[in-house]
Each structure stands twice: as structure tokens, then as C-alpha cells.
Length: 182
Ligand SMILES: CC(C)(COP(=O)(O)OP(=O)(O)OC[C@H]1O[C@@H](n2cnc3c(N)ncnc32)[C@H](O)[C@@H]1OP(=O)(O)O)[C@@H](O)C(=O)NCCC(=O)NCCS
Image (cartoon, rainbow, N blue to C red; front, side):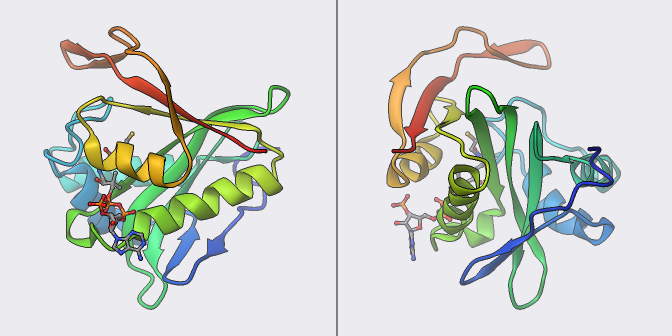
């Protein structure tokens, strides 16, 4: 099944709508990917302008292949404005494992919104996809992300994975957190 024909698993939480990316999400996503401080611990450089982010919006809209990866726009349930992104990737269905990622506009931090979004995606992965292992690969200095993962039941597993991420001319060595569904 291709990304175009698969049924996209949209979801809602108390405060959020998790849905497929649309062209209108460019500004909202740019407030994430264009924020140098926010992406400092990610494995790619910040977007330099909105055109670059539009390329990401188009690409993320196609990340809708349940057997491999899905990217959800995280939108305010009242306004449908995109305020972030949550995804899973590197799914291996047989091994019942995958990895997750997430980013939230800075002005929405500190309200538990991304915890709410990631929790929903985790439930989807465990209940619908029968996932057992969810990994989060995190820069060791990314304290908010480590707190989020820990809050949701992830445990430190190991690392650093030496020079695992290439960003431009440099490399980063993240650590691994994992959640095992019981
Ligand atoms: C990682 C990231 C999403 C965390 O953002 P965040 O706002 O701290 O996370 P949440 O939206 O879940 O909010 C949790 C915070 O709100 C607080 N909070 C307030 N109300 C809350 C509620 N109802 N429920 C849960 N937490 C609540 C929590 O105590 C927590 O604060 P703390 O970490 O200081 O204890 C954000 O830092 C980010 O986008 N970083 C850049 C991208 C990135 O690095 N992604 C991770 C890649 S591995």
C-alpha cells in the first residue's frame, strides 16, 4: 500500500488533533524547524526560510506508510493550527519495534501538549500496530526530551551511539531510551 492510498490514522486528544500534514501547515512547522535553538539537538540543520520548510511539509505529507513511518501534524483541536509534529519511523513490523520523534513550537512548551500527543501515538502503536518496543534516540543534553520520554515510561538503555547523527560537517552522539509495552 503506498502513502497515497493508505488510510491515514488521524487521531484526537483532549486538546489536539493529530492529522496528515497539509500545505497550510508551512508557518506552523517553520516555527519549529526554523527555530535554531529548537532543532539544536536534531539530526538536521534548521530551515533557513519558509520555502525550505514547505519542502518538509510536502515530504511529511507523504510520510504515511504504516508499515514503515507516519508523520502527524500536531494541531490545536480548536483552530486546527499546526503547532508541532510527532512521528514514528524505522518500523520493523516483524520485530514489533519502531522509533519516535517529536517537536513542538517553543511558545507551546510547558503545558503537557507534546506528552499528550506522544502518549496518543504510543497507544496507537501498541494497540493498533502491536508494537512492543518504542525507541527514542535523544541527544544527552536534550533535557526536556529526556523528561518527556521518562514521563511516558521510557527508560535509559544505552549509548552514546558514537557519531550516529551527521549534521552538516559535524557529528552527534545520542543516547537511547526505550519503552517496552507489557
Ligand atoms: C521535547 C519537547 C517537545 C518537550 O517540550 P515540553 O513542552 O517540555 O513537553 P510537553 O509539551 O509534554 O510539556 C511538558 C512540560 O509541561 C509541564 N506540564 C504542564 N501541564 C502539564 C500537563 N497537563 N501534563 C503534562 N505536563 C504538563 C510538565 O511538567 C513539563 O515540564 P517539565 O519538563 O519542566 O517538568 C520540546 O522541548 C521540543 O520541541 N524540543 C525540540 C525538538 C526535540 O528536541 N525533540 C526531541 C527529539 S529526540
